[in-house]
Length: 464
Image 1 (cartoon, helix red, strand yellow):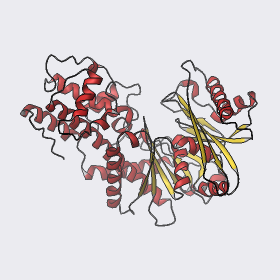
Image 2 (image 1 turned 135 degrees about the horizontal axis):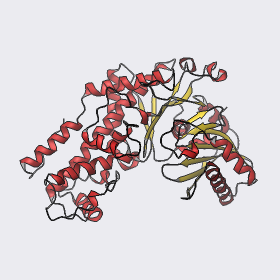
Image 3 (image 1 turned 180 degrees about the vertical axis):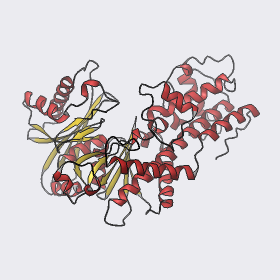
């Protein structure tokens, strides 16, 4: 465990900080156990969706050979559209990708906000169609084009084109459960007489893996570090005993699996939440669920730090006693994006002090600044190590699905890749270290940045 002793702090301040650091510390042995349990959950999830010690492991119609399909599309003039429906950020994103032999790819993107009064699946699909119309008009697209749709909700895919939002989805509005997104969007496009048809529907983590294959064809696993967390990998159909589709089951080509990693931790004997994690869970809208996600995802990291700061405040071990700390007392006011600012290495931690002044109206002493920075580092590094161990478990599963001994290539995308690079670096370092303890070839990582899944959705439309 790193020594977080603060220069100039009192013994009480350092003791309190040390106690917090010890509770957030994770050993290599624990990380190995976590990787093993993730692997077990993934294996069980291929048997049944209702395994108590399993992840849903949603099967997709996207196959590992899609990189070949993309290469074939690039040999001729072709175009596709991608639509992302993000229910967590209330945004829709559209992208077009155009191929021409011997020419660079032409990509256009546009972001739209989802109206606040959307209260039905039909209304959401109609709004998506309107935005598609705006996009093709803006970019003067006249020809008939395929549309790949991706959404941040779990899908039960029944074909390459169609997928219903899973009945057991815990993060979506009730009116979206069991809705066929492709069918709804396609019908809305027809009503507007648009030259666009849905040809593929995926979860965002699948489309991010496809986007990675455009640049790194051998990619066989993907991690999203966003408001939430998720991962995907390619699995051999013969190992998916719950697979009912005869066509997929008879295929010799690996198929994409949406692991729903956020749901890991429920019924776990390895995940060890602290009292602060239990507090976050208790006050959340989905108490008892998505346990692992609440330890590691963008949505929660800043709130964990805020709770640690308020405990320091309650113990009168941070900030002057006459400081107005009203803002600190409001939930989710310490944004995870602030944590990158806390990486400040200046002699007086000027940026840390500036943020506390601007965001919370707090005049922080040098000791206060060091404490806040240390708390951010403690929370961030624990999260990164836990994610790294989980990725190692996924790498083990992905490697077992392959016929060769080549290293598993993993893509990482999402907001945290740009907001908190030390987090991503620690995740990769931990995943490689834990993978070695599992006797695996060291995985290869490619960091793609914040948003690859809209282009990935467009590329998915080329899937055969």
